[in-house]
Amino acid sequence: MLFYKSVYDYCRFGIAVCRQYSSAYPSVSLSTPLPGIPKPVFASVDGHEKYETKITTLENGLKVASRNKFGQFCTVGILVNSGSRHEAKYPSGIAHFLEKLSFSSTAQFESKDEILLTLEKHGGICDCQTSRDTTMYAVSAEVKGLDTVVNLLSDAVLQPRLLDEEIEMTRMAVRFELEDLNMRPDPEPLLTEMIHAAAYRGNTVGLPRFCPPENVEKIDRKLLHKYLQSYYCPQRMVLAGVGIEHEQLVQCARKYLLNVKPVWSTSTPANVDKSVAQYTGGIVKMVKDMSDVSLGPTPIPELTHIMIGLESCSFLEDDFIPFAVLNMMMGGGGSFSAGGPGKGMFTRLYLNVLNRHHWMYNATSYHHSYEDSGLLCIHASADPRQVREMVEIITREFIQMAGTAGELERAKTQLKSMLMMNLESRPVIFEDVGRQVLATGKRKLPHELCELISNVTASDIKRVTMKMLRSKPAVAALGDLSELPLYEDIQAALSSKDGRLPRIYRLFR
Image 1 (cartoon, helix red, strand yellow):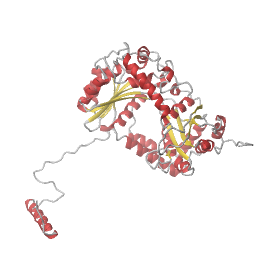
Image 2: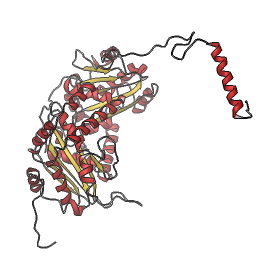
Image 3: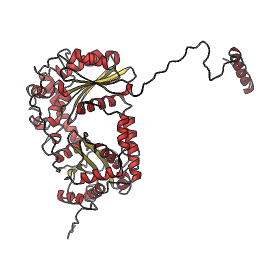
Image 4: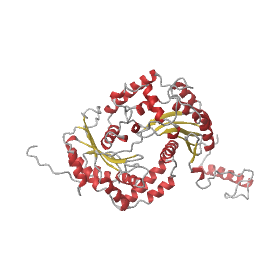
């Protein structure tokens, strides 16, 4: 190790080193390549070709969709046009059971542990998620394990054993999840379930997404096979992949998904429910003691939660983009939100509600959209004694939704930013590819969506707002509801010019 007596000596040594290297390459400048070093080769992209989604339909009707993406890992999965909305002819809860039973024992794999060990060899993980209209089986693993992954997915979707002990374990898991749903401090999942039940009473997306307690014992292997026979057929499936070559994925699909006979003996769609969502509006109330939801040194105060929604549109309609911009413009969040997509400090619900009314703990906008309908709603929470005032504040915000030009441009920019940031993630791209191809047979690229967002005008926002306000409200209420206004009063407020509730005169308080 060298030691220098002074900074001067250190500088003299540095200058000597520089002179030594400069004498070795006396005529080379920094802007020209060094002699003897090979010329670098950079990756290039020809237009949008590398980013386009390629789609192939196999002879049995199964669609194969992929988007290449540089990297060592890929995400591959099967999406099925099946969810809780298709359970009108069955006991509700089948989709919930299938989610819990996913990646259990199959014809090739003895147990879930064997499946996980097989994936582990390729650095892989698996997951299954169900929504109201889609069931998604997905695996992320190394690209070189693609053949194993598609084989495993085919077996998990088409050849599940559904053993009695697995179904019994699933019953226990479902019961636990239902108990947890009613006990957790965050009531958002429960309120979402209630607002759908109110908006689409007894039909399609209004059917329960979680298995009702009375149906837990009713669901068995025979019922599951009957449901799978109707909905798990190739014509209602998409094999989607991100991070792999399209031809390679198609080859694997032909090998493992083309001539496979499902365990329920037939794969032709039969007895499929094609009901169109019927928006009804209405109210669902649940009186509940929320005083002991979160105990401890800093407990959450007792709150009453209200969610008010109005019918928007399906994601297949042109108005879907203006509604997405409107939802972003409303934004909102909790009382401690401080930025981030969808809950920024310059959104309408933050500026007009949380900033002005310190007693409100939450005001957040949500937009749920399906192939035949949609729901835009606002969730608000406050002390039970101020529920009436809170409801009036929310109804006023619905009436004044049109906004200003500055708010519109900010919302459009924020929506585009959020879209592009989310589509940096491989699993998000996978879900986007799969859902779009399953619903429409094609995929709109991000730059196309950004162009549609940019074209939204103030008149579009005003038009969709007026269209939405013509529908009956859907209301979900949870907690102490002693001060909750009548449903007819909420409906009258949303039909008025200023959004105010009818005045109530009391002789005694």
